[in-house]
Length: 136
Image (cartoon, rainbow, N blue to C red; front, side, top):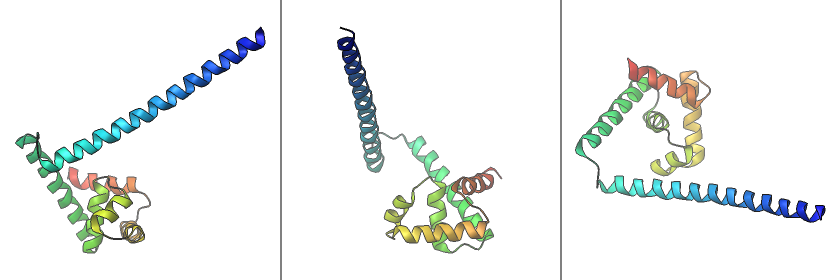
């Protein structure tokens, strides 16, 4: 009888773990769908209030200005400045490559050059420099 109870308990635990994993997977899928829907909604410009769009546009302008200032200060090329602005917005190497129609290796090369010129070793340090410029 004891062995049967242990087998039943093990089965219940296995089912609970499967349900937990399935729930996490469904949540991830739901978040992905929400992200895609938000992106489509943002592209169409529907539902966004003019004030929010103006504020987002102003923030992007300030961010690009900070990146331009950094690019001038550290003698970055135009393309490096462009890549820097995408990094500052939190874009991944893959996303930047797609957006700029360049290869991942090219993004990595630009990234390496930016890090060398700024004397940094990580994206966190890069974001820190951009935030400093924004707060001036």
